[in-house]
Length: 238
Image (cartoon, rainbow, N blue to C red; front, side):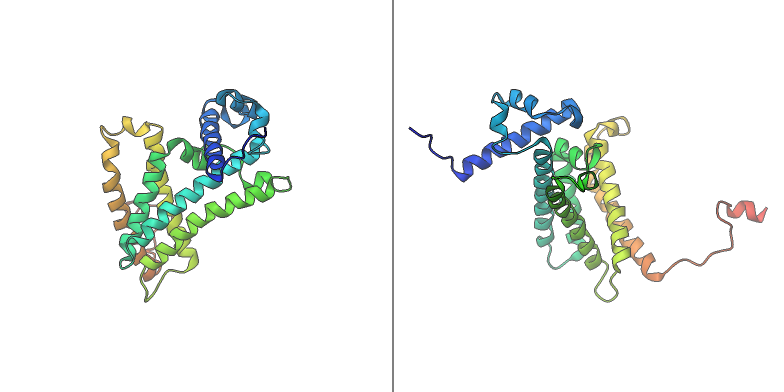
């Protein structure tokens, strides 16, 4: 008697379990030490069973990243819609959503942003280029959403241009990423007795700095006081 076909929900549950176990295995073995054979042993199934869901180690890895960026985007988009009347509060909420994702999914976040693992350019010209491009598109949707939020938060009368908005996105991401990484690798535990309690203060400070920076950007470059680069005013006056 033929085995009954699994429902789409059952198939999705199996694929999710494969991805979750793969993340844990990559943590212990590194990407280069990770293999489908080791994953199968961890799952207690035959390796050929995994190939029914993912054709290769790289396809599985790229699927993990793609799903991770899709989830991150969904959480940030929910934060976007939570404050339709206040672009500044919207950006603050998105920063909180990003931070929560990074702290609540530490291993996945590290795989997406921190560890030295293959990136899109490593797959150009290979059979996995299409899958890698899908992952790249998912990742860029997150950054583009923040660029749009930053442009809106800069004000409707004189919004930031693309280059300035992208610069502020990189500045904001670098700050959030630094805090998340410091929490995930416990380095902040050596710098503060309760670093987890700093999240609200860090977000508030980032938004204050953002608003001040936006104001400075709109005013244009500050006129030089004639002090050569690398030479302080005290040295010049002396």
